[in-house]
Length: 185
Image (tube, rainbow, N blue to C red; front, side, top):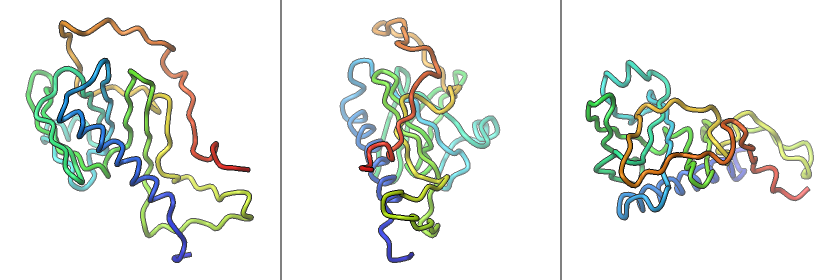
């Protein structure tokens, strides 16, 4: 099995590249229109740098919002850094792209959900060529909205250009779209 192409890993890397590209554009040009991002990440992942105060409050996972009050967004090849305020206290966070578990832009109902997939993990071969193998760790799954309504770590505040939010749909009614749906049968 070691001689098989790991499409799951390649797909995950490509979709993390989408997040990297969006954040790079945002760092250069700012947020266009009503776009804003919910980014969930594993606070215990290698390379995550947050204060001890935040780590104690969010020992496993944290969701941040990049909307009105963030600053000094810097995007590298493997991570991004951003300044945010938590309870009035400014903080600097560094998040490797590998630590991201979810990315969601509610202004256009676009999201990505990532699951842990490791290079050493072998996947079972398909029973026949028509039916792909299934595995709980599939990699990224495009989603219509966050897997669980996240309670963001950083609350956004009003600004002059902010409009009251009018959700198109009630929370929790988004449809999960799996990559398998687009495969030829």
